Image (cartoon, rainbow, N blue to C red; front, side):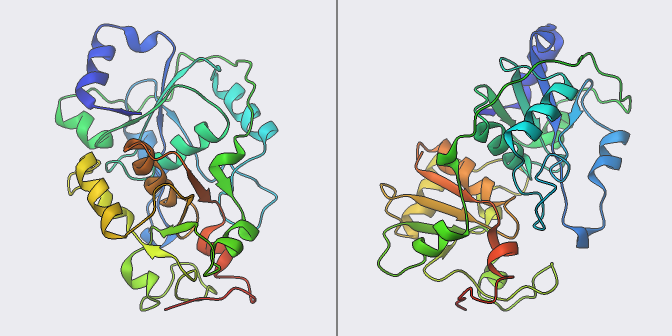
Length: 281
């Protein structure tokens, strides 16, 4: 599920990357950062890379940001980009691990088998002299794609409401910063409450990524989970601001062999906007 830049460049140099491998740039930024991920992709990306637009490949009928698309919507996007069910997907973000786990989770949500995240992202690729281009031409042609939704990987407001009950054994992990979790810092999206979901625990996603943009070692991830006194045998719900960095926790859990996780897709964008939602600080 994690691939190193050194492994990817070997596939690139011997031509094997053309054998059913599809690379995606899934970079995404919060609006307040004033960065345009697609414009950055157009200026520089790994040759033949496609852009996985988290906002575009989503449920357009929802008033919440980049909610998971329907099966039909996902299939259409995949077919238009030339993705096949047996394609080997490799995903990266520009600044490191970044938002690539969100795209990884989306593919897994729809049952895609071979999905990998490039450790260190584009930065790692550039560090070893990997080539880049600004050309938008690719070798992929329209395809046929069929998917199935894996409901075990996603949950909704009602599920989280039940999990927030003090009697529930379900764990809730919040990937937002400590300041946002405690309600000290304003939310980047206007109109949302401050604080966190009752009974939830804070695991800021950036603790899972080192300063160079690489996922931290398995032993360190296990230590973080242990410090939070999480019962890994019970279900774990991951949440964040809008369902993006919640996937970073989900990816890390999967990486250390914990499979009983679900992503709260609406996350704080939904919970913090509902009048009836209880919050803690």
